[in-house]
Image (tube, rainbow over all chains, first blue to last red; front, top):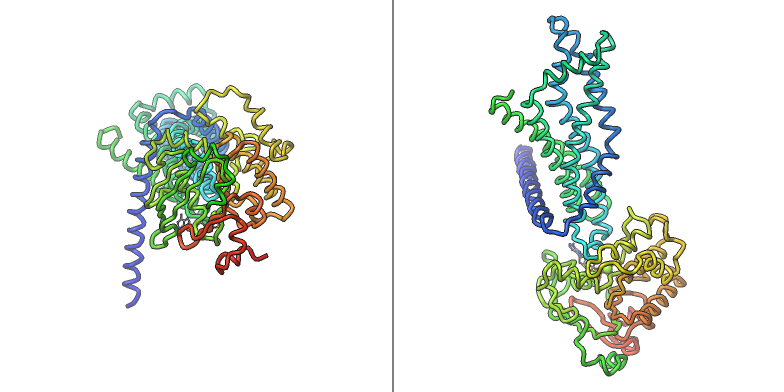
Length: 264
Length: 257
Ligand SMILES: Nc1ncnc2c1ncn2[C@@H]1O[C@H](COP(=O)(O)OP(=O)(O)OP(=O)(O)O)[C@@H](O)[C@H]1O
Ligand SMILES: [Mg+2]
């Protein structure tokens, strides 16, 4: 008997949290745009952050992408051959890698690694008054810390995705070469033949949104984190969850839109 | 109040006060921290603010520099109403005010050198003509930590962090310095060293200062005037000698040793 009102309150509380979270993100992004578009710009810091992001995720993204490409081919090869479609293996792998695996895996890895890093960093700067210290040195933290990080993730996730696509295709090629002997030229000709601009453009475009989401969520959660070490840990944790869900929702929406436009 | 005035050279009395706070109010939710705080600080004066932990001393000086928006009241710094300044003007004003944080607030991803360079590089008032490196070294020499220049903040002791915090707060040669508990949590010898450091820097750069502290020795040596913050207002003020002989139980406890 008593459990029904309890479920109700839990449900309404999480609904509250959900809308509060959305409002927080919206408010924060309005602030970032308002502060970020006003000169002077922090170009140097943007470059710095791009470099940091690139360095931090280069190896992880590369290794994961390679393995996924390899595994994709090894897993689907027997079935494809059974249906007499073995020669479609390069085309199939290139389309699944470029459309979905590359962008999504890069974004999810970066949500885990970059997003949590950003929010832990900003969170601890906040609770140890380092953000206040920047402010009294005449530095706007929204411009210097937040806008630069969001811009950097928005620019770097696409770059990392192209890199991941490429490595993953090499993984797929390696996978096909374990059982067959495939010529490099032949393989990559088939790969690029299969790709149409309607595959490349939507999947490349969505990576900018992924990057923006990861940066925005990481910064918002970090900047608004509660006092204390626990608050910082919690912020990093929540930021990973929220940005991963955000990435997946964006992925779904983009897929819907491309399908409505008849590109699928 | 009058005792404080006698410390100021006659010529300076006519000048506008460095800081003027009237009817300052700040509450967090239903918790009222400052209810009606009034204080005027003259040029060149050193005012020590005392009061119990959690009473709102840090909030007070954060309001002065615009880090916290008050709920009501007015604050004039160098004669400018800080609530009426735009971003640019506020940044410019902040460069004329040094702030030494209670927690030191050193940037923990940067070395000591980079920590000190940060305010210099962010100073948009002038093209950097002076050599940044020289200024950094001078600041470190002032606090006696020249050989810590390439250390990370995590490699410093608490006392060293406080000193670097002071060096960073003073590196732009500000006209006003706000110190938040510069000697709290340090041993008596280091506290005395930091007290002497503050006094010598005071002499050297002729700054106006607010020093928040529980340290009676620091208060005695540095203060032209002591303001006792309680119940959200400037509860009592006077010179060290006046307060030390006060009969008020709140204050008596503070000076009991
Ligand atoms: N962001 C905040 N939200 C809610 N309450 C706050 C916030 N910041 C400070 N307070 C409250 O305001 C009061 C005054 O805080 P403040 O930091 O000014 O104390 P203090 O006098 O500097 O104490 P201490 O000597 O311990 O540093 C405290 O009771 C604190 O709980
Ligand atoms: Mg304090």
